Length: 83
Image (tube, rainbow, N blue to C red; front, side, top):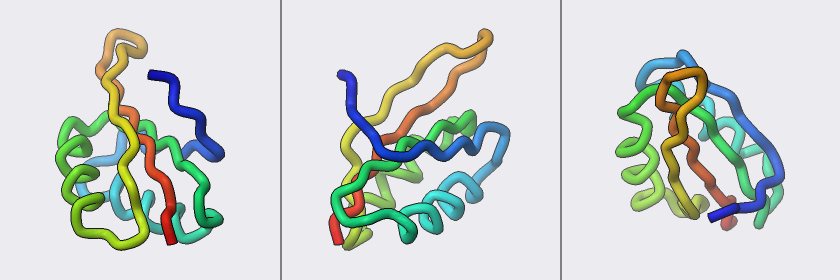
């Protein structure tokens, strides 16, 4: 699925909990309805973003995908600010 997005946050190399911490901060800078694409290398970010989306009031997790980049798994998360 090709999700369209407005901004990209590259947190490759950051370990838990930093991908989530940086994403929360970035979401505050988005307008309602905008989509943030987060690119991470931390495998734990998949579950972290799922959990955050279940409890957060202003975030919707649209999609997650795993892609190979330079022989390494990269985890891509698409988040929409809802309020």
